[in-house]
Image 1 (cartoon, rainbow, N blue to C red):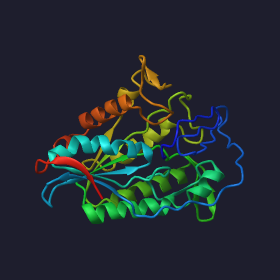
Image 2: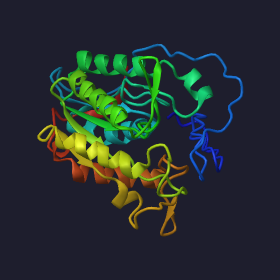
Image 3: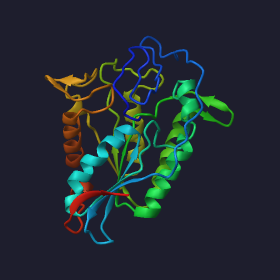
Length: 286
């Protein structure tokens, strides 16, 4: 989800990009949406590249995929890895899930503006692998929870069919990433919301499904849980923890929250800690 402001609507969260999650705290029913504006289709693929300046052409790369919670990780990771001779490439798409399923987002308006997401994420991930052959890919997104449109029908989130469609799409992600090791960041419970949010498929169930999927890819997928760093007392979570603001909306990090998140990722992912290339000075490149 793109970070464009911090406005929050209590019973229909607007998470930065104007995504009306439309999750009523009582029953998860969609809120009414106004007439949808025309979809905005970005020019794709569009990768943000942070090269280790002066590094050899064979220098390793770390890719990042997901929504804007993934996008937030890119520059801090580059600041940490570029001096070690490791480049960082963002194939994230603000407002879009990492998977190629056609999600409803529980919002007709948001869906109308993001119909490109399923195809766009494929293009981004294909370009990431083809151009940079990343050794490691960090995957972070919080979008995998709404109904799926498939074969002319709408598949209810959390159903057996939905779970199969979702995990099959995650298998396709793994396929698109070549032989890269995957660092999977579990979604953390939404700050300021009940533990069972979103009602369509709560965060706790999302986390369990991700863990089940990762267990089928042992040796390739490393699961990192940011909850101990971002929500140490467990759900329900808050933006402010022990007097320190760690998130500025239900899912996005403040600078201190990001510092703690990056530290937790590095601590939990030996494959990232071990990665090094020719010593270099960091800098962005296109």
